[in-house]
Length: 111
Image (cartoon, rainbow, N blue to C red; front, side, top):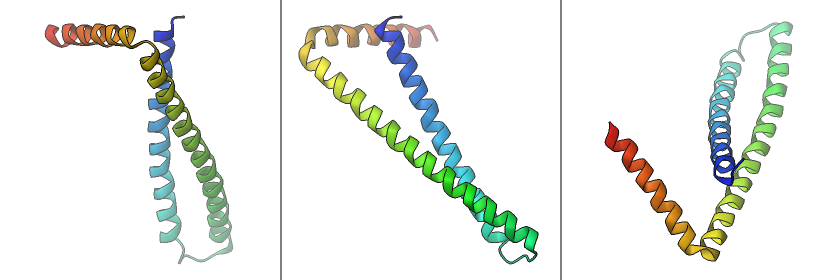
């Protein structure tokens, strides 16, 4: 597998992870709102259910926070590696950027 394909797959996975994190944050916020809305309703069963949901949400928030931090760290590492590569191989970087520009131009021109 070429470095370019690996890079594209990694970027795609990072975008998917970012979207998953954002979607999960929305679900957590909605679940918290639901918990607050049902706080006034009585019954031991409801109280136990709320406690269990709150515990699950707290654990999920921690896991997503860890995933988000890991994603940010990987993104920063990739940006640093790209910066170092461009400084070591400036002409190759210019050639790659020009090639990508030509391909994008051709794709846009076909529409």
